[in-house]
Length: 468
View 1 (tube, helix red, strand yellow):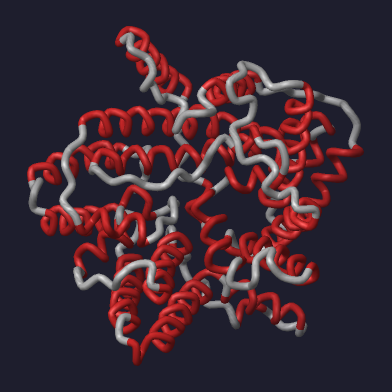
View 2 (cartoon, one colour):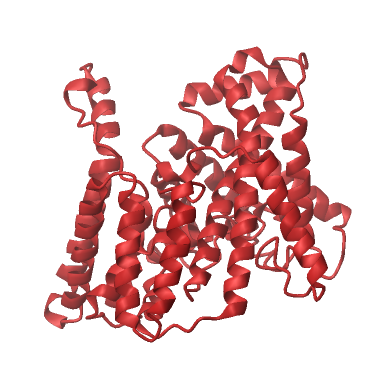
């Protein structure tokens, strides 16, 4: 079920009403969450439900076994192997089988399974794995409440595209009584509205031009390609962070707090700051469960280099079975490596231009450079193959300045969202009105955003990160 569908706008208020009618009955609320989440997820394909139920059941049992000293290590590695095996089968088998067949000079068709990739499998798999690992590390006690655990893994707002929650944050919320918080719910609606604006107005209007250019690279000049690369950078940000805003805001309606997944990444002053602000739930997952166990930065320099490349290559490949994602990860590893070797990877941890309306010239230059580097990387991410990405780069840097087209509607909306997010950069989201006392001002803003959504929204049928 899509957040932008009519079905969702019928599903959400009905679920919300029943949920709070069951207040003070935590187990019944959790059971409703599970049922609603399975309806939400099964709307795409009911067969997907079998897989998520199996993954959840195995992770639940593994937690109980890890709690028994005798079975700790076997249960942990068994669950990791099982979950990664399922993920690998559905997401990567056909890719590796076809590449091996091509290497051997055989036809790949005979070895491919052509399995349907379940929506959001990478997200809920990593969420389930974090529970087993945290139980093993003693950060959380294994739960015996199977309904609460199923709710934790399948919670519908963030099930399909995150944020990837940790059991230490989300599971305890399902184990205790929730009370309706009016202020929290209102802010949730605001954040959802902002997420819809980012998705259907900004991202989907950018997509119109981006898809046209990528569909016929040779027909466009260098400036058009540069604009397309910049607009795709904004598109993927607004598409994915828009989903996260809707998910986080929706969870607030049910008294659940999810972690922040994006924090104005395009206002970063270097690529290390960018990665602290982009897809935070995934980058911190890899940091805590892969990078630090490998030794992190507290090892010999050659191991630091190894660890940095491992984390970025794995992160790239997490996004999909294509060499372009590995190349994208390697590209960012190369950008990140000098900062971490020089000990400057945590130079910028504050809010840029804090206490000032405008950045200084140095900060402006740093933000521009970071955006350009990220945009160059996004060309690899967007392309279907390495050769297509190389064609795009070659044309962008060498095809001349002929036939420039500027998609004014998309540019205006991009400028608008960047302005709002700059002014609101110290807040949780663009429509955070907690400091505005005037109801007239607040509701004028809400109605203006709603009007723009209905008049200029494109309403694409999916979100970019659904494929991951």
